[in-house]
Amino acid sequence: MQSRRLGKSAIHVSDICMGTMTFGSQTDEAAAFRILDRCFDAGINFYDTAEGYPVPPDLKWVGRTEEIVGRWLKTKPRDAIILATKVSGPSHVWFKSPCRSGMTALDRRNIMQAVGDSLTRLQSDYIDLYQTHWPDHDAPYDEMMDALDELVRIGKVRILGCSNETSWGLMKSLAASEKLGVARYHTIQNNFSLNNRRFEDELAQICRQEGVSLIPYSPLAGGVLSGKYQGGATPEGARFSRYLAMEGRQAAMGRRFVNEKSLAATARYLQIADEHGLNPVTMATAWSKQHDFVASTIVGVSADDQVQPILDAMDLVLSDDVMKALHKVSKDILYPMG
Image (cartoon, rainbow, N blue to C red):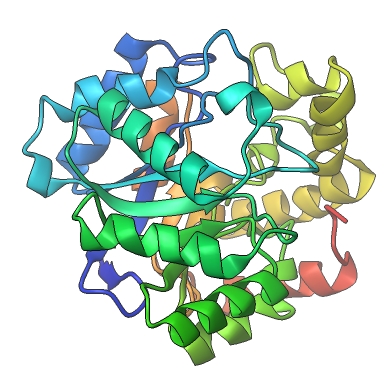
């Protein structure tokens, strides 16, 4: 497994990161521990969570994921783990955090409250990577970056990152940090997969030019690229099977991931995988890693039997023929997720 630097920081991480957003809802603690142990034993040292997890967001279990990760963390040497978590932003579109009664402005008070609560749940005295989870474009970036810088200076946080940010927001934050002489974002965590390549339109250039690393989430497009939703299937227990049966934000998110164009693109990706003797999960994970602006690809599983195809991508480099075939599908079916 390769190790890559996060932005311009001193921190190096495994090029696969284990995500945890279903731990405490879809995945119980015992299963979560088995998954985390297996990843750790395989050489993965990078783990991502958030104060607003698990999903779907619900007051009845908010914070449970960090608590599970915190209890697991006590079973391992703390300095062997690179731990990332997030402070909830206002999230106006897909994800409404139940933290602090939904009042999640990214101001000094909320940031300080959030980091303290996360450290308690994680049973740690520091966080390696602290990320803003959904931006607040109507709030002053100067105040936000100054507050985040204070966390770095007092040792509660090592480095900073953002999530679900736009090109405008990323540049605005970098400009604020430069103007104030404070800590900057080293990472951006956005959706990026074969079914969602919008990151390459503008943000990839910013990452290259400004020394910011993408740590993409949902490389399997929410499990769609595994093929499990093909032919109108709604597998029992699958996330979008549940979301599509709900209303509001969750149903809209389900339709964004599972739709006519995304299933058509997936059908062609599945054929490419079959022609080259690849597991489609392994192929999609390896494809995500194979970009110069990506530091570590965040994967997520809800059961132990889903781990191996991801681990198989650790040392896999896709051939030029495979990469060209995958790129052709992306050109033929533009923006399957909108």
